[in-house]
Image 1 (tube, rainbow over the protein chains, first blue to last red):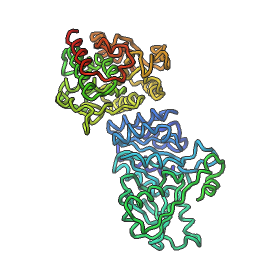
Image 2 (image 1 turned 90 degrees about the vertical axis):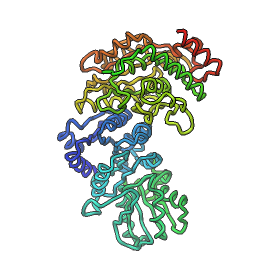
Image 3 (image 1 turned 90 degrees about the horizontal axis):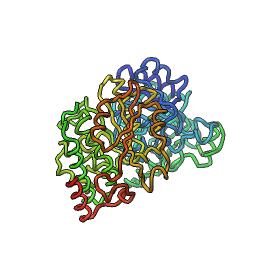
Image 4 (image 1 turned 30 degrees about the vertical axis):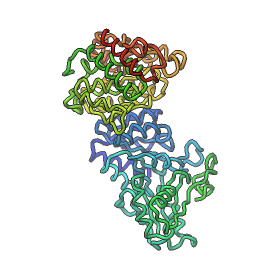
Length: 291
Length: 272
């Protein structure tokens, strides 16, 4: 996903002179193609995420679309108030990019586990979450975000994720994207890089014949529209590499409760707090957490 | 070029009167903080900022950011008194559904950026300055901060960045009234030696009496003081300046003047 991100960003930056990239002293062997080709639109803000984000908002207020880039919780929680006040409240075109969403940095420990980021971002009015399920969805998300500039959060996995699309799909906020055909009333619904887990589950006896959908773009503003998606279904299992609290499944359950769609059962599968503080590979931690 | 070029002392007096009335009407706080910056803001709007009240978003304007957003009545008053919006609009300050909220709001004509949480103005202003450099624009960004606000680490991140990138189109003014929320800055979280700190961070530093209009105008019209360095102006001020019973008093960070106190304060301004 990292490579798709930087390739797409370079391509978009050739067409859009307002695109700038600010990194928080991270991105070695990833961000160089952009830095080399667009030195006047690349900044390393150093290890200073509050300034990085305030700086991005200031540049965005002068016409730039700024991508801030760092890993795990550094571009999100460390500067949460700058995202809330400076970016989201002012509706500025800043895309906060976090690499290593979920437990991708498994053995690096709790400081590097991004398992509460959806909870932060989905409580911010004007903020759009982009959580692509594969590298093609990364490209689709970036094209969408550049065409619809505003406050956004792009959550990437790490590297080596398989593609489930042949080309960047057509996407829109809140829209479910069919990945695997199956019974439409029984759905596996994932967001972010754990689309891979949803696809693996769909091969098991327990979940065979379920349709698999990815939701790469979602936000507070798209919750009401979920009633329509739920209306046609009987049983939806949401899957995410994020804690239950404040996550994607919670978002859909809130939509169900708020908009009175009681006929469809929504079962949320998300990480349990046991993963917090446990050392292990991504797959070990995901299993421990219930995925 | 400031197209107004009006009497800054007269503007400051009118701003103080408006600020007092606004805070009284809305039963709001922070009048001491607002009175502290009236002279600085008056000199900026009357003399040194490149601005046009008829065109608040003119691309070539200087950008002014009030990082100590709680002192907003001073800026709202300056904007109204210089024609950015009608004076009558000040009556809405703090009222239901008003855009004139009690921390400075970008929804008000002439205001670039909403603040209220401290430590946000300088990083944001640094981003504007960097954009101006990269876009080869000659406008400046001026950020007005409080002294207590310097406890926020984000300011020092921005100071490192601005110096590293030689943003000599950026001006930070510290309203150094030496009082913060509960007691003095010195007793809370010492900022001294402030000038040495700013210099060590790579900024050009000057100190000034923050109520001396001629000295403020002289310094602010000569920025950058050193090519390649951002400018850091330490403005020594008195919290509550202009109203004797409010000066140097922590309680006027919070209290709202009664009708009698308002009359007393306005009387003092009229006889100053």
